[in-house]
Length: 458
Image 1 (tube, rainbow, N blue to C red):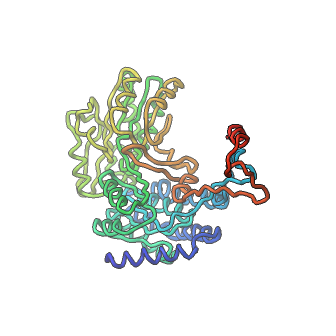
Image 2: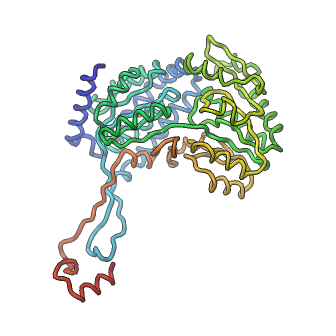
């Protein structure tokens, strides 16, 4: 698609929005219902595309992408009317005979740029929020997931007029051409490098941006944790989607006294969940492309290898791998892993663990396995991170009532449920002053009486 064609699409969407087509409740409701019907009717094609792009089994594809998207849609349809209503706020006595309220207003023409690792979920969830809030949207899925992008493009084209929603496919040149356009809002999910480029391009137009990025999300396991259950849940979350999950536990930081027991339990759980030979398991995913496959192999230090480590170049698969005796100086700790490699580090005191987390950029997620309320409070008070779980991993992002987003280098802004509607809206502050009373205290000439009254009421 040429830049001129992109400009024409943007202008058509701007005109469509300015005509008020997206504002009514019924227009938004019908758009969400149409998207819901489209996802259901294209479910098998979406699941098949996820298998092609990422090796996801139909069960994993539905559980982690299609099903979660439908769940968000269901939540938004149930709450849409109340989200659109004005919200009354208290009015100070000095403004007596007034009604103060916050009025949600759509931002306008939005751009949604999504990643390759969850190409259905992370494309359609922000689109749900954009449509619910009354916006138009241009959706740009990742070129690294071409099969899924093709299904999404076909599905959206069959469902919506291009003036409301358009999918633009392609790679870097299309991304750059889109970022040269003027949008009212940009929602980006991906890595920090491209995120910086998005933020820089948006600054030229003073366009507000939400960045959903990533980082090295720690998993702290203290000496009071239920080790077998912790291992089961960590293995599920870490090796889901072959480790290519932005909120996957990037590394384990465990108390030295439980390290051996935890590693033994992790090995047992990997075999239990993926079989004796995970590379022969058809339900185990694959690395997205050769570039990332090669990068991940470069992070494997044979001297630290504790379990796994096998790979298959033709299928782009790396088995669930555990690294022991890892330090912060190792290559695997120098970047977000984004693959099926799990380093294990230890600490002696909880404050040492908290200090280690805080010595690095704020992560998108943090996980703590403990039965100690004191330790729970210490970690929550002592660490800055986007979100997370206590005694579980990953699953916090499946709750529509919980806003999802990062902090610091792991992102800015959030979405899901009410937070998503608010992210794609501007809340106007309105004071509705009544005509039946007009107190003269604010008008000149000022007198001693007015001065005393002002001191009384303000």
